[in-house]
Image (cartoon, rainbow, N blue to C red; front, side, top):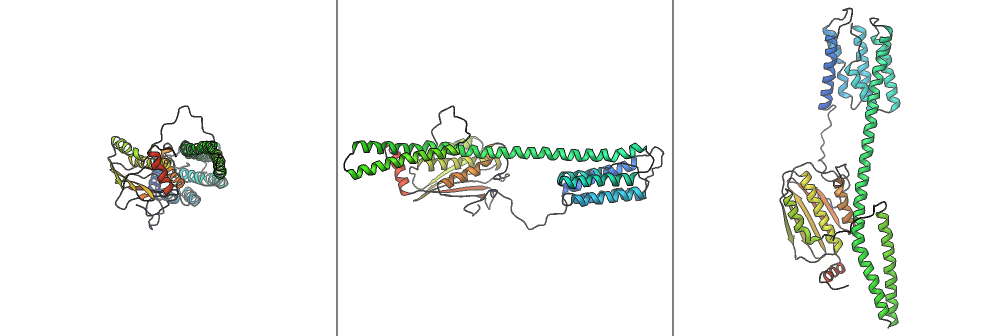
Length: 408
């Protein structure tokens, strides 16, 4: 497991860094280069001029094949690759009786420039492609309008296709960003609802009890003044808390059904049983004597375990999981481990639905309590999530009193 106590966005389950230099081209580059070269060679071998003047030669075969070599560098140097392809094509067309054509190698080079370079560079590259193709391939065998129309039309089709693909990918990226923002907003609204159900309830109770004490304990005056101040503070805190929750829930649709009771640490048994039924064998261990937890802390423990087990079912593959709940004197810790080897989820990366942003939600929940969160791959394989939430003496005492049913 990662030893970092606070992991930044994108740190979870990142691939290990290596010092190996990236190769100048990839396997896909080689496949694209080979395919384009094969298409050009087939065109050179089987394409015949109407007057029969085209003859296949070893020199022509070599030049046509050599013209495809610059495509290997098209990802890192698209403009240079296009320039080299144009130069080699022009050399072959001027020195050998080659047929006039707009070859596959030139199409790939120009398409790469249009996909990766700014509009001004693309326009200059398209104009240069048209000019050099017209100058080098004009042989007088075809009609003038065929000689003049072919290269510009081919260039327009290639560049137009590349720009259309760019526009489509920009739209897809924008939709993904919208989905990501919506997922984060949904998570924040869910946290706001939970805080409202728990924190606001206690503040309201404090206000009502303080008002009742003031009404029934008119003496001594010092106590009465203190209770008046407590009531005023409670009312102010309640108003400010509601304002904060309204900000967090801005744009939220009104709820049509009453909320269900919030789960806590005592519901981990049910969560583990559901995980086993879903196909992930899971064990629950409790260390230290069980004791009541504040509702917000118990809810955070439950949600972290829930999200960690959900991620394990999605990404760990065939695996086993363990949930360890540890009660310490001044804190409670929840740890979820799996021994799988599946592809990890990336924090902040697009996912199919809001669940892909669970790590963000876990971090926000832990931060609300001033705790620490560590997530990362384990040395022996698998993935681990460890959250430690501090407990003050007052919180522990209040939770114990509430658990016994005594009003606070």
